[in-house]
Image 1 (tube, rainbow, N blue to C red):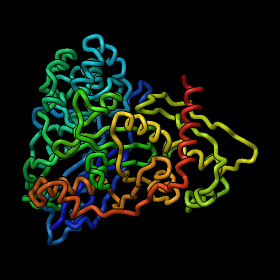
Image 2 (image 1 turned 60 degrees about the vertical axis):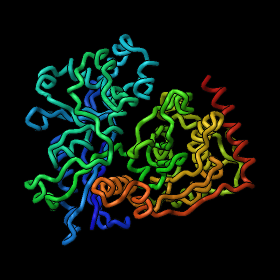
Image 3 (image 1 turned 180 degrees about the vertical axis):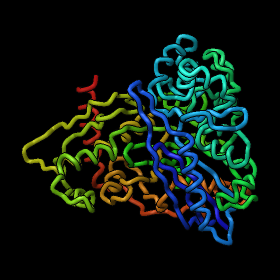
Image 4 (image 1 turned 180 degrees about the horizontal axis):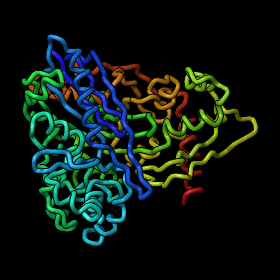
Length: 491
């Protein structure tokens, strides 16, 4: 018996076939390109991406052989939606959350509904890039397309609709629209009235992990699936990766150390008295009933390390370059630069614009390895700074599961444990996002009683790194220095 997980990102789609014990049998990938224009448009070619999604499903499902796929589930990026007509046909490109053309409509919306009211309803701080402002732009800029569009779907739910014919908008991605009422589980009539857009343009919200139907026979043949394959409602890609990493329990967290550095906090406190609301963190429904996620993030994670590789390590051969870079670092060295990772934009709690990255406290004695270690510290201290604020509100993270390229470095993982002051565990799964989707698929088709059982069966733990008590004093000093330099430079 096998389960299929699908993950649709901004530049690549993947489909992974898993056994029910979590072993990955096959992972198929296809790349595509965002299309940008001078007006700030950033879209995905919908028909091309859907074709490549079908290709990865067919390739991965073929590996099931005589053991057909029991169920499948899809995760995708937030904010991006695809227009469909009344006959269920794709009408145009997918406007993504990176698209800037709808930004000016945020101010238009704020004149009709206050930021505090929007946050109370949606759990989101009003900001550019959410689905609603892009829809407002689309209505004005492409009125014919708008009139012909019966409904919009995010990519995760596009797959479900195309495969089984049921249109639903999963509640995790609904929470990325700036329109969803997280208290009622429905589209907000207050926000609909303020925006002037009828709620019918978005299908009804559905909980992640519920069965939607079975694959249509004509597509089943094309995709190497059985017509009995159960299609399960999907989720946000960050939520799926959190599941696949094993960070689904309350007070757990997943740290993604990819191009972006993103810490996903798992909790059960969405309401008015929530410490997460006290800190003005965005709050999104997770894929499990009663679980929510909040995000801390900045865009100077792996992107900063890649820049340093290009500018400071040109002498190293391309093959194994990052291992060689990290190999130059002395784990015991204390004479490191203080790096403020604001080279690109940040999210909570700082919300700094990009272009303000800083290397402080430089001396002639320092080497490129000293600067690199300082960069690793700065990338991580961003999260320690925010977690200290959360702790002051009575909530502490108990363990962090690490995914992404940074999770392959034992040095960075130990440094992360020391600086955050909590145990850190590497993710054992090669593809946490598609594994999380496979877990939801197993729950949705009744193979597992719930995500607890799915995790016990499918998630394997990686190596555990505990904070070194001997380094606690240095971690506290680094945090003090980081805060001091940030306060002086960014008042």
